[in-house]
Image (cartoon, rainbow, N blue to C red; front, side, top):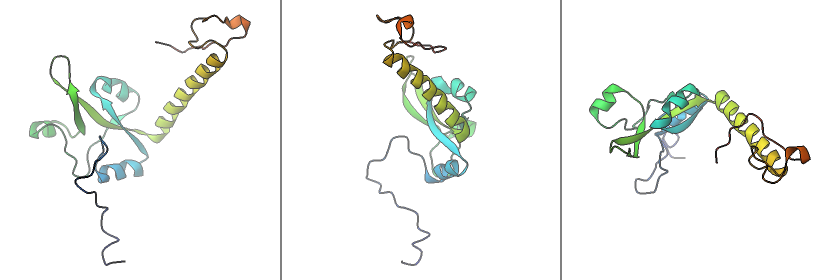
Length: 150
């Protein structure tokens, strides 16, 4: 091995396509080491994300933050422009993270609902709310405590 090759950071060629929404390595390394699961959250979902345990992530490396000097002074949240709102204002998404334990709980809750839906489909009652020709009293399965919106 050449001298210093162990300390050299992995080079990312400038001209190759990169995944949209990628973050700097220092921030990614910190999140992984602290047991956090990252996610981009659109601004209209921020309240729900915060209530669900997500926290804003501040950058560690060379990540550009905000839309200019005043935005960077206001907060150090990682955000990206995603488009325009109906009123023409800029729409953003924010980089957030949640503890892996909470993430796993959320995933289990989603899987529990998916299993109920699978049982209902196999029982001939795909929506769980209407019979679709098969009545639960005739062997169909139903979903309980699940809100379904087609």
